[in-house]
Structure formats: structure tokens, C-alpha cells
Image 1: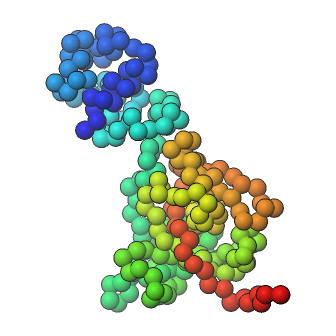
Image 2 (image 1 turned 180 degrees about the horizontal axis):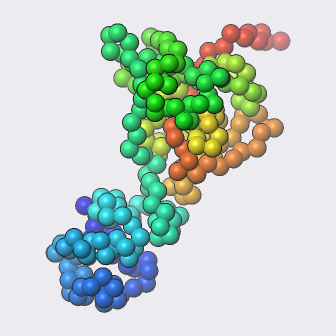
Image 3 (image 1 turned 90 degrees about the horizontal axis):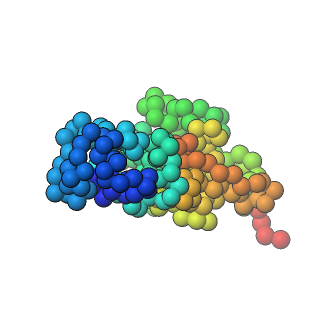
Length: 240
């Protein structure tokens, strides 16, 4: 647990003395000192009081090492915005399997992309998607295919299918790598990502076509992230 170091860190960030905090939560300075030095544990009602004082949930006070958070993340927490610090949320991925129990690769065609942001967790929606197999992909990983529309990501052209590997921990997103990102506001987008989660709580998404402007997505608006692995296209462009 990180409780002792967290409450000490938060007290110092507010510029408060042990005496001032103790008075605010209804205990003594010596008791608070014991909590900060791990020689004593507070009763539950004081946990609640500390949570209210610092605007941080009890779960984060106990289980998250706040010293690893960025200044941006800490300031957001202190404003009462209790978003995920790591970019790794508890998510349950809805998926389908074949008769042998192996994972399918579901395909999200252009006509289904508009509803994907709402139906990604709906078993009926996912089970209604077409599926296929690519035997050269790792069986222990989860993949999904998305049909691309538009010209923002050459050399991948309009109508091609991009295959993505599911990313559970968004901290692993690498700068300059292509990802399929599902967001609450923009739906499914295929872009080159730059990871700004720790510094700013955002992803910067760019296109390989310079005509399209980069844009930022707050991490709390991100639903899913899939790392680009390969693509399938029916178009052939011979070299000149």
C-alpha cells in the first residue's frame, strides 16, 4: 500500500502542516504523524476525511503510488477529476471464438464503424460482425480488423482493411506508431499516435497525409486502442 507516502505527498503539495491537517480531519498531530510514518493505521472515518480533504478516492490513496504521477495528473486529481492515472482501465473486451474455442478476428466494415463506439461492448453487436483467421498471427493475442475510409493514411488506401492487436495498457503506446483508436466523440480512427498520457493525459493523433491536421484526444474519451499489425487491400498499385 502507498497510503503513508501518498498522504504525506498530498499534504506537502497543499503546503499544510501536520497540525493543520490533523485539525481538519478531527485527529491529533501525533496520530497523523503515525499514519504518515506507517507506525499506525487510521480508522475508517478518518480515511473518509482524508479522501474528502485531498479530493482523492480511498482506493487511490491506498493502492496507487501518487509519486509516479505527473504534475498534470496530480493537479487534475486535486481539482476533483478522478480519472485513470496510468491509462490502464479495467476493461472487459467483448470477443467471439470459433468451434475450437480459438479467438476470431472480427471485421468492422465501414457501415458498422459508426455504431462501433456504442456497440463495442455489446455481445450481440460483436457477434454480428463477420470473422476470419490469419494463421500467422500469434494465437495468444487478440486481433480485430477495421475497414478504412478516406485518404488520410497513405500508402493505405480507401477501402483497405487494417488489422490491429488489442492494447490493454495504454502506457505502452509508442510514439510514431500507427494505431486504431476508438473514441467517444470521433468513433474509430486510424492514426499515428504520440503518447502524452503521463504529461498531459492525452494522445496526439496524426495522419501520414500532411493535408490533415493533428488533433489531441483526452484519455478519458478513449475507449479502445489497437496496434496496427498489417493490412489487406484488393487494390494493386504497380511501381512506375
